[in-house]
Length: 116
Length: 229
Image 1 (cartoon, rainbow over the protein chains, first blue to last red):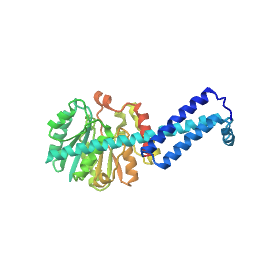
Image 2: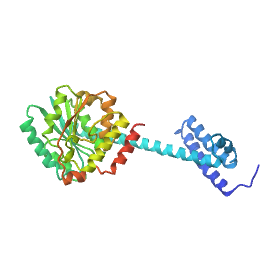
Image 3: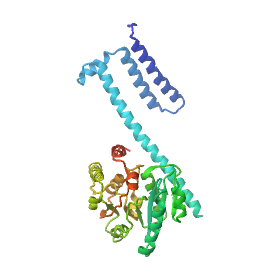
Image 4: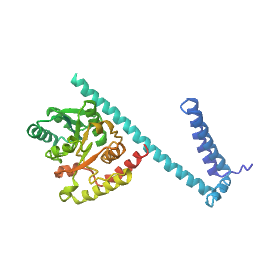
């Protein structure tokens, strides 16, 4: 095993440990289900693997016509980020809708009480 | 025949008092055969809209926080549904709609020719500012592309719904995009709709209060998101 790691590899490793620890804590609190826990832990551990073995991605990169593994990682990260932003926006719209429902119920209830 | 006239209002203190008095006068003189209730939805106004509407002796529902046109309209339609109204008519509270269009707009619904009537401003587009003509045309095009239904005026606030439409409509959007969403619901629920030409009174006040042209981009994003909800 090669122990001469670049500073960026150490930094990324530490950065990836943080979400792993969050997922573990949420799992212990029972706010994350076993399936989600396994998925996200696997996802971040795969990231850790790629940090220390960057060439492992080159095979997949060549499969999809990308020259370098690191480029493939950046493209994938961008795609995931765009998707997550989209999902957050959809969820925000759902939350806004729920708030409106609550405000509506209060308005209708006040009117009903006035009629009594 | 019970008709509920719904006026969503947000910071309309300058004009809403006069609009309500004029509307009440019009109903007393021209629509006395119908059982009509006026409903104002105060959408969390920070001015005196709520107090002025309450003094006018109409039904007033108060949103404790601002939820936007879509939120206010959905509250009005829900009230009409829960209180067993046969028809609901929505119009703007800034005085840009003419009350004389009310009998014309409810006629197709009373004759069972439509479940929803849209008051179209495009038949008198010469009265409309040019930027609004362009924005309205693009909005109608987007309505066609996203929801497969063509209208000459997708952004009109003048609409009539019968009981069937009141029961089936399920509005999810919060702000100006609701005008386009209504067409999506018409299509989804196979409601019959028709358009009637209406007159619009453009004043400096209504121009300032109306949609900003750049807001169209925001509306488009919200409509796109609605497809995935």
